[in-house]
Structures are given as C-alpha cells and as structure tokens.
Length: 46
Image (cartoon, rainbow, N blue to C red; front, side, top):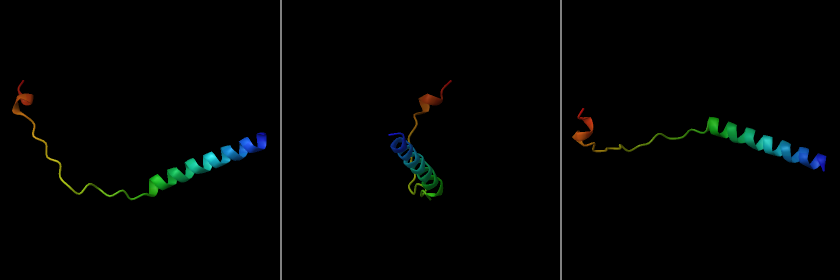
C-alpha cells in the first residue's frame, strides 16, 4: 500500500510540474478588441 501511495504522489507531483511548465511557456495572445465604457460625469464630482 505504501508503494502505491508513493507512486500516486510521484504522478501528482509530476503532473503539477508539467502543468507549471506548460503555463510558463504558453504564449497567450493579447486581446485584439478595444473595450470602451462610458463613465458618467457625476462620478468625478467631489
């Protein structure tokens, strides 16, 4: 049972390491459209 637990732990740690490497090397594209939001002038009154 201890050997199985050790194997599962190694698989879990390897999966986490692989996921971390994937996220560090993934080239996420930047947004390509502009976001425009109208802010009422009342928000800027002191």
